[in-house]
Image (cartoon, rainbow, N blue to C red; front, side, top):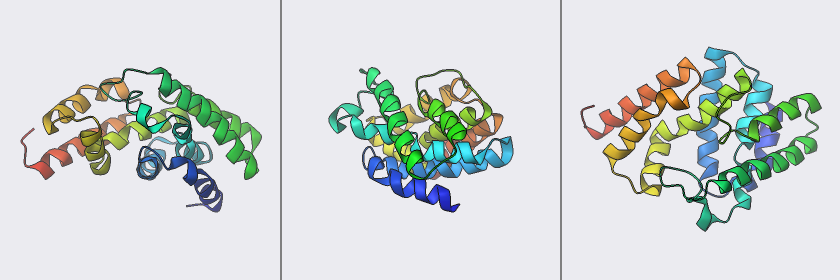
Length: 192
């Protein structure tokens, strides 16, 4: 990881100490690098945006977080709150590392809408949105959400399978999601 991204990561870590966001962010970052390689995009926008996209959850009380996202969300306004707070925190972190102002503005725009804005504003935004959602398909993310959402294995597989075309912007992310679902099925011994 480039030195500047490592500095951003170190400053972000205290804000990721909720909702298993440290694990989430590391896996999202791996997907982001893979998507950048296949789809293009600007790593100086995408990587800081993916590192910082969920720092705002620290401002939402833990007992309320589960109400903000997932298949049983009842308070989606909290999802919007984490984007607004995340943008504010991200701006502070990027200022501390003297990040380029124009690039910072693009990063903040991505963070402020990465979950609630249904359209992507750029290729970089598509990659961040796709990387974020791909976490749910990864082995770690799948089982974290299985427990968190209190779903059966088959319910989770079906839910994730049914949103691939709706959720993902890039063909590469759709392919990754399908492969990850196949891997989850193979690991479990369940036939798809």
